[in-house]
Image (cartoon, rainbow over all chains, first blue to last red; front, side, top):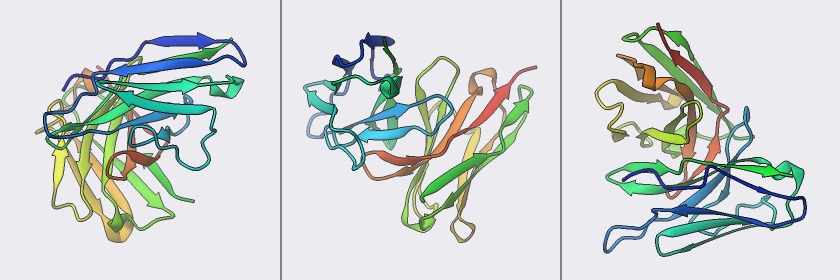
Length: 110
Length: 117
């Protein structure tokens, strides 16, 4: 499976909302593959912010929301804050014991 | 605190070898599958390998199959990624991360590998 497709960059002003799409998440017939999302501040360990399409781990702000429809998953961040500035990656199982990531989206908070 | 700490990265010439280590703490390694993921400069992450609890099942990305070998020593709480026949395109930060079936829940900070002459 090819890498999932994400925009290279998105930006938003403090307090605004942004959405990052992740396309190419379709599953083979008869199967379902979940999408997870990761936040990565350069130099730090990546952090899972959503798993199984839309489940938020404890400790992740409810300003973050995720969904999936068809072959596109989406991550929405509302009430943008300076600390949200980071790289965001989607990921899904690609079958045959392999995994695939998106190319990543750099979020800039203006 | 559950942690994974990678080490062993560095500079190596094309065709050379490196062995990366991933030491875990705060949880019992034998209870979890572990992945290796890498990120080349300016690119998104790339899944590299996955090893099951006891090391009896290991999967590799096509890009590293036959050159990289993943192993683990649960008693010592450590995993290894042996990388042979390294190429320029293997230049990346390498992360180990814990598997939770449908996602990866704990990550290390990574170790940098540079393959260059």
